Image 1 (cartoon, rainbow, N blue to C red):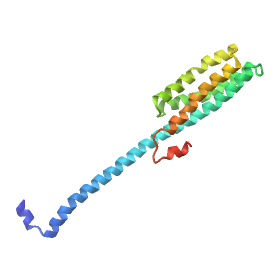
Image 2 (image 1 turned 30 degrees about the vertical axis):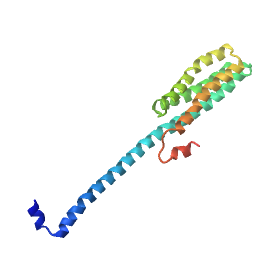
Image 3 (image 1 turned 120 degrees about the vertical axis):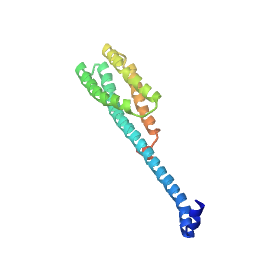
Image 4 (image 1 turned 180 degrees about the horizontal axis):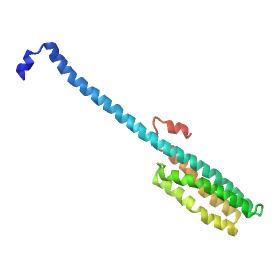
Length: 171
């Protein structure tokens, strides 16, 4: 080997000595860029799932707010049962995509648990409204469910984002 090196011109020896670290540097740099882009792609997928969750949550909150108000009017004998049933169907229509997005949304387990508990209590609340629940209790209980759903917005806002884009979108 030393015989081979001694026969090489100095220029080629110098090129050989500098090319190896340069190629290593180039490979490490490319690897770093690839890893960074992969991480950004993963965060973008997380953001997409959470944006869908925030949107479906917002739609459900909107319908539940209507249901809360209509239930109060119903309890005060200002609406008949068919009107409240129609609004409940609207709420249930919004509930289906919300449940689906909650299953793939990437938020903390505590936030998911609270939202699930809220929507699971909805059927019992509806039965109590039908049985003549007090108006004040009706408003408080619907508001608790709605509050749990609104808390998902904070969970989405605090999820990781790429270069702070999610923070801008949720404020």
